[in-house]
Image 1 (cartoon, one colour):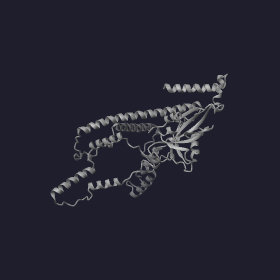
Image 2 (cartoon, chains in turn green, red):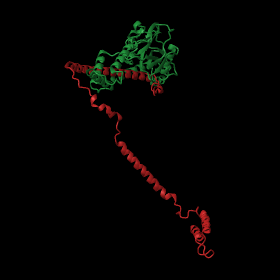
Image 3 (cartoon, chains in turn brown, blue):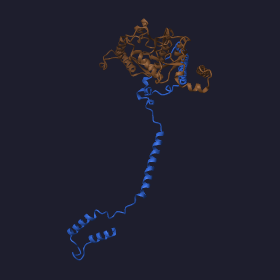
Length: 277
Length: 167
């Protein structure tokens, strides 16, 4: 608990220093009156969207988990009672043995379908069943802009934006406008991204993380010292980017692949609120 | 008034002596009686005077309340008994002796292997739990910090509940 309090104290101190420095005579009443009005705040507010596609398929078991599963199955069978099916199998085995030893026909079997036949039928059906592929085409081609890849992981949307003169990969964001909540900013980002093709469920009104940075000296205009980005989590329900959108501007990345795209400090903050699965 | 009515009735009903002789004829008497009865029959002559409601009502109410209280007490005593859970009673067909499996004797290596595997598994699960806990703690911490930052810039919306998330 000491670390966060220290960080907030520092943050507070930094903020107060920001408020005080433009006014060198800095009387308390001036700063207190200036704080509520947003025009004096040097931080630009941005609402960003952490859009996740939840996994569609369960993860494959690790070797340890497979062994354990087998052991548990064995223990369960050992400690159980015979089921109806097994009792029937035992009875029929006895009857067969008797018939072989007696060598005369008793009344014809009431049940023509022996347990063995049933089990063979089931075996056949199981061999014919083909489960869906876990590794899709997009995985093989490593097409990262497709939504149909890595079916057992969470995928996050990243977009490439022009910031200053650089192209930077980041989570989609939009500038906050006065009169709306930050969550509405995030919803607006979602709408502008795909022209209302993507539908998402937002997880609450509170942001899940934030990132603040100061502009380099060249870009710093008066009154804007830096920006604060607040991330809002949303789960993708339906929809995808239409193929008409130019490739290369967006990517669906899993948590490991984020490192390929995001800057280190940004990445560190984003990683904190993403569960590893 | 009732006494006067009674007196009139008695005089009417007693056999009229002198005019008709000691034994009056049946039909006439019956007719008189019928007509008299038809008139007086409606008036309840043998009733007690009407009782006032106030005396008996509180008694009746109290008696009713006590009956209810008794019933409640009896019900409460009944609910303290444990109701048997259906799932804990083994069905009769599973008590059949023929269903018991013969006990399997595992070879020594198998039992060793399974014991080792169980120990490794417990360690693996413990590590997994620690990782999960750390992940959740970092999630919560990130959110807490974000909300604090938001409050510094004076926004009150983050603390409101989202009704869309509640079932």
